[in-house]
Every structure is written in structure tokens, then in C-alpha cells.
Length: 232
Image 1 (tube, rainbow, N blue to C red):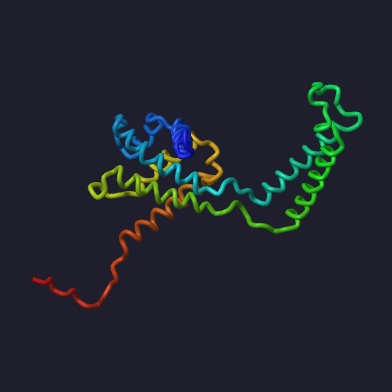
Image 2: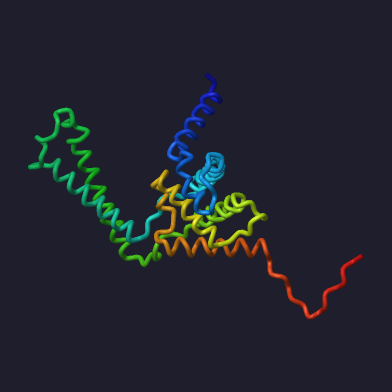
């Protein structure tokens, strides 16, 4: 098998693995949110459209970003874990409880315990540094989520058959919530990239909606001059 064939095979396996948590029936609530009957063809179409946006959103996400308080908490846990393990492996620790295969120099040697000590010291330094800085409140802006909402609006407009049916925020919002619930159910880790509260979710989605509608329908510039007669 050539390297190209191997790459294609791996890509196919990755696609299958990504799509597996999203069977057609996972999109029933999404269809019902905009008044579509959950028929097989409808669910298949929604699944095809939304899976592309789900994947694109996940690929754009920069990963979990922690606030200053979260980072301090993480370093404290790391420090405490390193000190606890170092103590357990030292004199008077519970070494006899370890299986014989784990009593080698890799685990019980002085170098490993020195590494644990260095890790604890680094954690202490990071805690002091972060505690002394003011930092930024909250978490970083969810830029990937804002683009995701834009993509969901596009899917929503296709689903309702625009311009046959006029897009409406009151219809789109339940659709967006259902789509995000579907995404989180299939990929729970993505919750880190979504707004942390229902209010933040609604407000951000609303801002993106209004901005997009304004771009699609720019306000007409008013003029005191009378309109020109239509050309014949």
C-alpha cells in the first residue's frame, strides 16, 4: 500500500470516528426546533449540513483556555500531587504496597524524585507569579463560537428555504440551541469553547444574528430629495 493510500485510509477512518456519535436520529430535536418533520430525508440533510459545520468549528477551536484563577488552581493541584507522590516514594512511604515490577529505578530512583521536587517548585513559582498579576477577568473571547453561529445561520436559512420563508430570530434561536446540544452530546469536550451560561449563549448569538442581518439588509440612506421617476 502506498503512503497516499494509507493517508486516505486514515482520513476515512477519522471521518467515520467523528461521525459515529451523530446518527441521523441525533438531529430530531434540531429539525423540530424549526418546525420540520423528522423524516429520514430531512434528518439526513440536516446531518450532512451540520456535521460539516461541527467539524469546522472544532478545527477552529484553539483548545481549552484557562482563566488566571483556573491556572492557579491547576498549578496548586500539580504541586500537591507532586509533593504527595514524592512523599509516598521517600523513606517511610508506602513502597511495600507497590507491585514488584514497579520498584525499579525509573520510579524509585533519586532522579525521578528530584524531577517531582522540581515540578513542585515550578508550580509554587507559577502560583506566586499568577497571584501577583491582575490578569484578565473571565475567559478569552469565544471567537470560534461567533463564527459557528454565523455558519448555523447559513444552515438555518437553507433549511427553511429562504427566501420562501423569512428568517426570524425567534425561529433561529431554538435551532441554534438544539444544534449546540447535539454537538455537545457527541463531543462533550467542545463545551469548553461554548459560552458558559445560557444568557451568554443567547446574547452572543443575538449579536451575531443582528450583525449578519444588517449586512444582508443595509439601511437605506434617507434623502430630502424626491425619488427620481422610474425610467421607461
